[in-house]
Image (cartoon, rainbow, N blue to C red; front, side, top):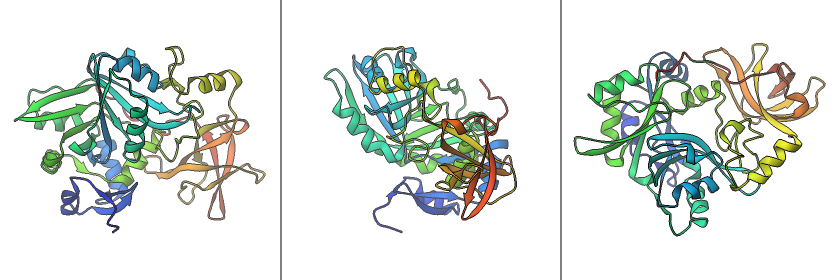
Length: 365
């Protein structure tokens, strides 16, 4: 294990619970405990828990916070009432995605952003570069331990631990005090199932992980997190999103408000809307049994022309077939288009399908 890896405050509990630990994005993280299939099924059918302490938390305060965030982010922050959150993008001047994140409004002039682990420093530096005098920024990432509790039974687990505390509605945030501890719970996740992300002081994280496991949540690792998010067609920053790709090319224009006024990258996105795209992210699903698709495997037309590469790929535990995502030229993006995926010299046929690949049962309110 490299000495320069970052460590989450929950690492001792992962080891105690028998996790297989691996380097991931500069962190030392659990990839699985029992098996990816077992953990994936637990989230789809019951409830699982993930360590998300590596993710970042940035607090934005001040009278000018809303107006400034609307210039920095692609979605419309002004639509948020206190207690509400939304998925959004931090873009560069080329319209490329610096990060995809969730921004929560806690009060009229206070916002809480949850950002990707590998982008914490870049995000904070970019925001600080553009910071006006009437806005305060605080990078609180080292202060918090984070847990994602996901699955149909997630709400029941919360009720066992917090009598009389109601979970916020979907995409909502609640900051509350429990036995003297300040806690934050956000009703969102990365699996497509009902669930929430739970943040406590870093020093209290190990005890909370044990408490949630004792209340019925199955410990899950990065392997199941990846297969769950990919079944939903959720992008992974650094794989499916990058500073050279726009939200429009990623098929995520729903989370961009081009009508709200100026924001960084807007002109490029408007031009793409008006002039059309040259490439777009599509979902691909095997038409036959085959070796698991992985990122960077070549995607070819049926006549053998290389037209792109997978940015994500996995054998879907729910569908028991290979699925993946790739940016392809527009002439290959029509639903039903057949392509080949080159898996170490073997070609497997796949077709362009609508995302999500898998549709979970309806969530609770």
